[in-house]
Image (cartoon, rainbow, N blue to C red; front, side, top):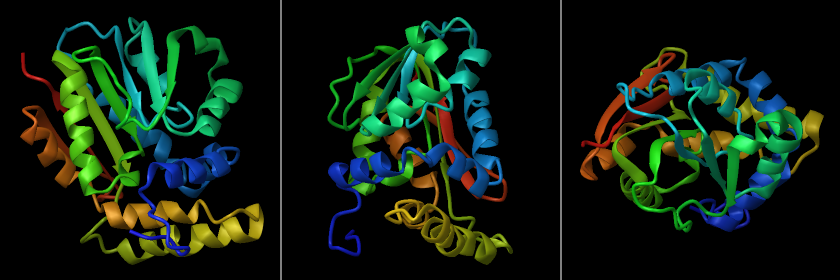
Length: 244
C-alpha cells in the first residue's frame, strides 16, 4: 500500500524512518492522545500471559518501541532474567534506554533489526509479547510473524499481543476514527511541526482493523490462541500458549 509519495508503508525501511523521526515525542504523544489507555492496555496485555506455573525466565518483546511494557512484565514476573527487545528503530530503543529503563539495562538485551529478518533461535523463549506493533505489518508479514512466534516459543511457552483497533459496531466509532485520522494529524501539524508521522498511526490502525485475523494465523501454526476486545474494540489482542 503506497504512501502519499508512492512508498510502500509496510516496507521495513519506511517503518524504520517513521518511528526514528517520531521517537523523541512518541511517549508523551501516545499517552496524551490515547487519554492514558495505551498504558492500561499494556498492563492488560501482560495480565493475559498465563504461564500456569511454568518458569518465566527469558523471552522476547517484539516491535519493542520505547519498552514501556517492560516495567509491567518485570513487576508481574520478577523471576524474569532477560527480556530481548527486537525493534527496527534505533531511535525508539535509544529513547527507552535513555529516559525510562537505564536502571533495568542489565536485564534488557536489544536486537536492532526487522523482526521478520532476525534469526531468533528456535524454542528459545518462555514468553513473547508485542504491544502496538502488529498494525505496521501487512497480511503476508503477519503470516511470517505468526510462524516466528510459534518457532521461538518453547513448548508450554506463552504469548500475548495487543494493538489499537477499529471499533466496528461501536456507536462512538465515528468519534474515535475522527480522533485518529483528523485530530491527531492536526495536533501534529500545529504543535509538533513534524513530518506527519503520527498521522500514520491512524492509517495503520484503519488498515489493520483488529487482531482477529492474526489469532487465526497463530492457530494455523499450532498455537492455542484466544482473541479478545478491549474497551469496545478500540484495542484488540490475542494470547495463549504453545502446546507441550
